[in-house]
Image (tube, rainbow, N blue to C red; front, top):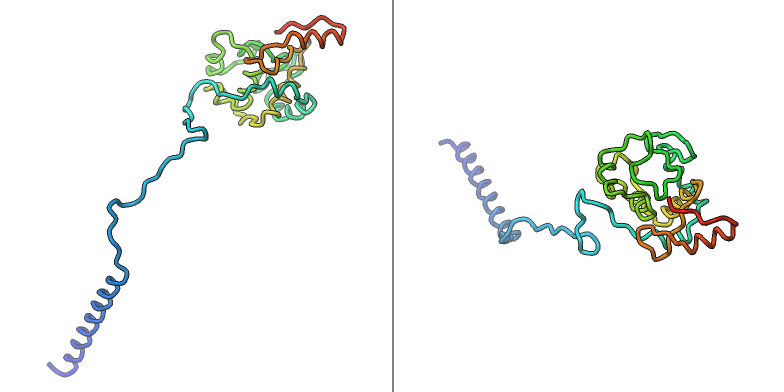
Length: 211
């Protein structure tokens, strides 16, 4: 071998030696133990209250609307109805649109408005003679697709209780004989006859029967 080959081999061996030395030193400085289990566990949190929500299932549970109706503002409810006006009419004899006409809706049997083609989900929900009492209206307006699985109504819902109460109070007035307001502690939208009689007496009329 000539001197140039010897120098080249020496340089190559020297480079390899340096790289091996750096690797050994780095391993000693930055070495970490292999964990017993790879990765990390993901713990799914339960919804508030510790109860998981049941998918697809049954009627939504909503706070009783009666106490909110006792202090509801029907005039404010008319403004809320603007969110519904693209799909519903509310005047007496008004036409059906994407949704049915809502005149005299309080206590009307569910899925019963003449001339409207209700979804299969709404027809199923209506079985057993259910009516749009105050609590049914509130729960449906809060979460339509949760309260009535399969409904064609695409509205996301009114999450604020006072907003729903204002709207329902206004819808109640869109009738020839508005349904009596429920008692503050009533369930299922039960009427409060005493209040209805008192109101009728002030107006000089007989109390209106529930629809």
